[in-house]
Figure 1 (cartoon, rainbow, N blue to C red):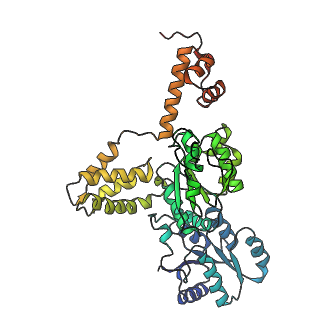
Figure 2 (tube, helix red, strand yellow):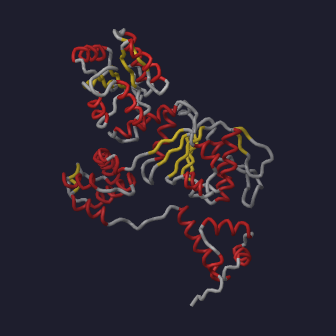
Figure 3 (cartoon, one colour):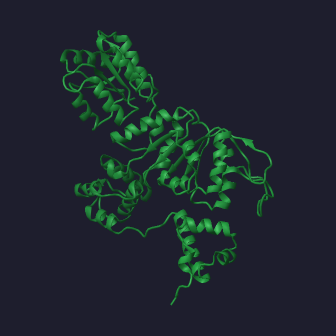
Length: 451
């Protein structure tokens, strides 16, 4: 098992060396620097499991270092060694997130115990089990930003707090959700994911909450919804921003009351699930436009985790590329041992608007077409240039069709909403709501010349 790493910050060479020896003798790995400025530079490259810093140092002192670390990575435990005169400052800092403080001369067993408790938060203490990192084993990264995010994810996993995972398409939101489930006390129970934008609104309610026999045409038997199927476990509501408004109300009730009502049922049924949600949309903008309920947003957004795009974690691109190469060569039974240096440089420098999913697709094309033992830059360039035809997500395709359909009816009826409603088989209120959603003004279609 990898030893937990402690970053020691002290401008006293002798004390820094003494602390290093004691920590290493107690099962820790130590990285030591002599100033707060050097500590911040170090943290930009790698993330330790805890920071131990002296309070009084030349230049940036321990409290300034703590505030700088806490602003960047609030889940990273920081412990301060302080003289008696600065105890009030340290006590005040614990209310702001400082993990702990010790007075000089410090008691070595107390320091070791404090560091063990700090590293135990992230599952990296010397007593942690051999498979303590198995919960995140599917996430390939060497990025300090990702390490900080995963530390927050592990802390959030220990509670039942709702987590909202944000990030661009292809950044691995479902992968992170599965990791949170594995790190949680519910890991032995089901993990169930559903894409709220990929299922028609009239079917989504039944899929989520279940239905009774005879509730609607085709309901030939009782059906347990996903919430009931995930009893005791975790439900991921992917693309939550695309959930229809009428279902947002019912989901809010599930969060508030811990019970669901299947379609066609007269009574509610209790459910015990932990809810994670994910979206690539800006939900605050959706709230402002009336597409998403503000009260539901605050229920879902107890903890927010934002996955960085691949272009902001370029140090991970070579790791991911080699990982995907291993998987894909096994899939296609090819003997490809690596990348030409210029090919790897090209992968690392690319913009990756489709993030990790796009990287996987590019490498799959390279593996499928490669005839040599290493992937050349020419294949990478071709795969990056020859992008496959853009496939819209189902929710976007449905929205595009809906808008074009409404425009064609408005043209046909010259903006008469009652006629649009009749032809579409919907009531006027619903049609007005659809027109508002798509920004269509009926008056613009009146008395127009279609020629």
